Length: 411
Image (cartoon, rainbow, N blue to C red; front, side, top):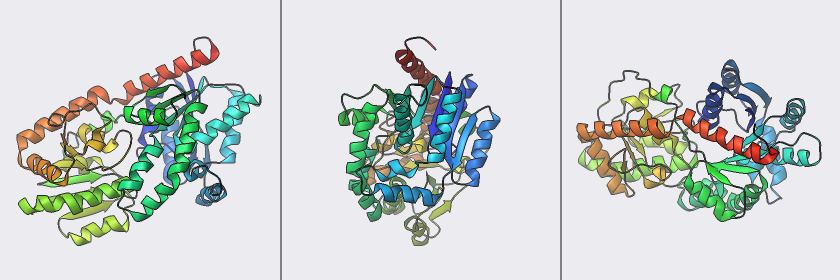
């Protein structure tokens, strides 16, 4: 198939969903044109990596000033600010030209931030300005469901205020988007349910789960396991990760340290906020905040246990999948695993109180046999259920069905 894949942020090893779906579709023999925005030199490097495997690209620099101006103009309206953040007229013009020159079989638009590109292209199709092509929207998560949780659970006052402001706008926008596109996909049954509750009469919705790069995270780097080390990974400026880190260190670890004062916590991820960096100062010798790392794998593979204490969120948590692929035992909350077909005590341990989380951490830290069994079962699960290649095949089958319904003939 010929796929035009619109992503409002450059796909990369960090923005892994679109990156791995595109790579997998190329390996399956499909033609993919990526349309995206760049903000840094690392974005251009990621584009070059994708071009090297055969991805065609349309990309435009998107300055922070442009994004801020977009949001300022949107403030008086009822549209979510993040829906306007990534709008770029130069990229939109390139999209129209590309579709005129070589119409794809399907257009894929990712996230609420990318939705405006899809809507404007559909308007241009209706006006006869460009050939008519089916448009699939990947919501990724139900953002209003995420914001509803954040406004209630976040431990950052500023994030609570922002998400509370955006929530009614986002709910209104997603209600319309589910109905507007030819087809919708999302990452989990929970997000599908939340979107359908917003708009029961909307487009069909398929669940296309998140995967994990098994060839990458599964590579054995021969890392020696550190003694009594708990690792938490993720972008540490993201509000749900901030709340998780604060919960782990302030609520869970004091209960662990009461019984074993030698357990260390390593918080690994880019852009830690002052709240996060302060944790290392408050607990010298026990808490380490690394900031950005070039390679997450050594930190996962050397940890005794991976903690995923997510208190709110949507979709599948990459940090769970990546730890499992690295053969590291996982202790997580139910919220972090609700999109996965796992059972506590088999592929991982699930605990939803601080005391239960602490007890499970101590059990894994002190029982080598349990730790190895959970790590092996978790690794087997992700290999069977979260291989990006198999997930891409499912997405392509959605494309085929949508195209056939739209055109009346098989691709």
